[in-house]
Amino acid sequence: MFDPVQPNIELLRDVRRLRIDGSDMVIGARAFDVLAYLDAHSGRVVTKAELLEHVWADLNVEESNLTVQIAALRKLIGARGIATVPGVGYQLTLSAKAPEEPPKALPLPDKPSLAVLPFANLTGDAGKDYLVDGIVSDLISALSCIRAFFVIASSSTFTLKGKAIDLADVGRQLGVRYIVEGGIQQAGDSLRINVQLVEAETGHLIWSQRFTGSLAQIFELQDSVVAATASAIEPSVLTAEALRADQKPTTSLTAYDLCLRATPAAIRVHDAAAFFRARDQLHQALALDPHYVHAKGLLCGLHIGALSIRVITFAEARSCLPLAEEILSDDRIVDPQALADAGIALAFFGGQQQRGVSALRRAVALNPNSSLVLMSSGWAHRYVGENAIAEEHLLRAIRLNPIDPNIGLARTGLADLLHLRGDYEAAIRLLERAVADHPRLFPALLGLVVSCWKVGRIAEAGRYAEGLRALVPGLSIAGYLRDTPDMNPAWLQDIEDALRAVGFPE
Image 1: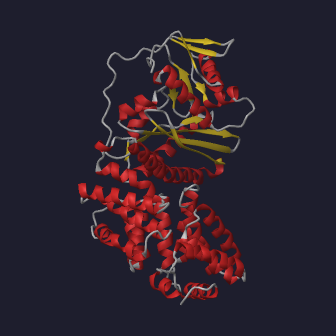
Image 2: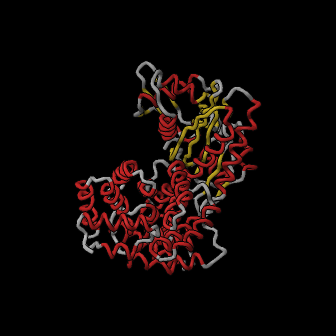
């Protein structure tokens, strides 16, 4: 790695070559063009839009392409060689002197930590600063409700407003691993809000999204941005933390690291091997800290996911119920995800549907912007026939996290509601998408058997029935009715009739 402040850099424009400290460096064409443009305008901040327009010309590309090139350049010329003005753009700062005594880095908290920087007002109207700042303040408040996160207060981050900064420096100064930044643009009556999540130390882009709406609907747009961003950041940060933990030496693992390693499987179980590996990790975590509520919740979620694809039985899934009881018996617990996992475990295979719904209501109240919590709540309410709430929560879960790896489960719940309304063809279309997302998902295959049978598509019902037999070789009608948490008589009757029609034993 070259000196981050004063490497000797030569741009050989005629041959499009970068030379650092006398050595030619390998650099991509786009990265060279970005550096050349920043160098030509080194006396000012160059906006992202200007760089995109100059470097990519008539190509329609996302800001993430620019972020990738900036990260590559920083690896070559040093992190301080290019400063970031949050939400605006970049400035080449190679002539800047490093401080004689750099500020001492704050230690990172023992949970995922992030700061939301002031968004850039790119509307051309300074009078809209209040609007931009309001969105950031609301976003900080929403993220602070996620108990798994450590979030820097707005009074600290707003001191950086309008300043050229280095993200790594900000991360060290505030003691956070992740940075949220963004900007607001205006064209006529249309507003565009860009938000992205990056890792402070490396500048690596983890997640980004663009929101558009009219100025007349600004308050609805603001609510949408805050809710969607908070919901999307939650799984994005947890996944990033899991990947980071995987890179640590085995000898340094703690209960927290073990939970991070198990998190991807707890969110979506792919097979039996993944389930058993994650289960062992979580048991190790609890052996280190028997009071670790987050680990207890993850174990419940892991068993829920494993049962959904039938790599374990109902009897095996119920082994986690004592942990769910421990979570719900303590009124001091305010971890919404742990409460949600415990609640859906009780509702799904614990025979306590109403108590599970009560736990989910509490979890939603604690964090109404978690797609994971909302999906569990949707299923629990469906079990007890509160279909309007179930539909609202499942739709909101999909809207908040449209690329959730478990989106097939949400679509299955919605399809069941469509079936109950008599819209069987719409249910089939949604279930087909769910199976495409998650081919081993038992409730989706079951739903296809029932809805296809209902409209007379017997051959298709039979084909999906084979998928059920492959997942559960000994499946019988009585066995299913014994274990199912569903309480709707009409739905249960349709299942019984359909399973009998496609040849399942009594």
